[in-house]
Length: 558
Image (cartoon, rainbow, N blue to C red; front, side, top):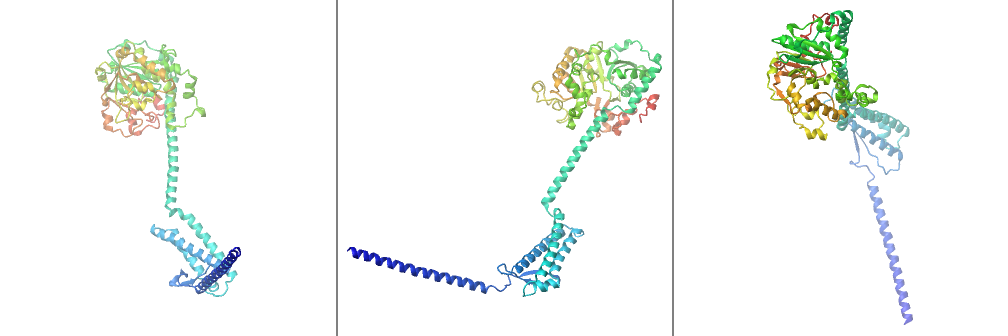
């Protein structure tokens, strides 16, 4: 049994070997058959067909047909095929740009002609007899010398085509056009911002500067005072200066010609000029010149004038007046008065904040009216850049209803409200005031001095001015200080009493100006400056005393 088993196992193994051998032969035969069929198929398709041919347009509907197969073993023919394809690709590209140029109606431009000429050059290159005979129509081997020459000319024309496309691509590529337009807008915007900054800077410089004519006038008046001191001895003050029954005006300025225009315009339009009293306060530098002017040109109609220097009021000292105390601060002096590069502002809008006049005692003198004129009951405050066109005595008869300040409101819509002048991100401002409250104008204000004393408005002003030493409550000027000082003690007046903006707004109608009792050249374009708006300047110049010899000598150009 053992032998039988062994024998059966041997027989079984021999059968397996035979089966494997026959399977291998079948597999080899199948593979050889497949290889033969594939070879036959390739041989049958080796002739050029209609689908593989390339057609190149030529003049007169002629066509050149040629096909090159990459599988062929001749590398020169493969190279010619690549060059030929490169020519056709660039012809198609140039023709595409020419078609787009026609669509954009650029027929008269040089670009269209250049693209058409270039496409024709590519076609002409292929139709040259030497190249056609040696490269495209010959069935024999390709002449390498002719091929190199053909390739050189093709590369030269391809280079020209690429340069032309690169130079003119932006005219056809919308994305490039958009990007270029964005870049242009950005560049123009940068130039505009720079021009605006330069314009604002020049305007600020012009507004701060003293014109030659004004400087000349002050010097001529001083020269007159020095040459003839006996003519300009101070007179004893008359009782009319403290008579509460007369019409009193407060005018604080260091500009001699501006003071004279304001006073002259009031007097010329007053029905009873002898009842009008002007209290003029100037700085020490212009004090003598102002006195000489009004000595040489006395007021008409018997009107009265008092001229003082701000230094004459001894109670105004750093221990009492916050502005004078703040002027002693090194930090504020550096901010307002020093002009080093590190102190200059990079923001155009902040240039105006650095004007030293905002710390001028002459500018803040308006908050001390009851102490300056203790015996008066009412007084009309006028800025030096106003012109009076009508009799103002009716202002003294207005019932202020217990309020301190009578002023014209300036708000319209969302403009000129408290939010525009005060910093409502500060907790104290947010707590005490409403941002929607309408602002009013300084420049022509009728003040009830008795109500002022009762409401202790000067103490209120001191409180807020002390808190604003770091400019955290408001940035500049006396108007924000006035808004908080007279917050609940201001009575709105009819807008016809006071029209402002003639130094900044060219769109104010002449009808509105003619109806106004007082016109105000608020803004940088003051009427005595070269940058004044000619549209309104004549309304100011007509009150200049042109008979004054020094006005003529100093060439005001009026």
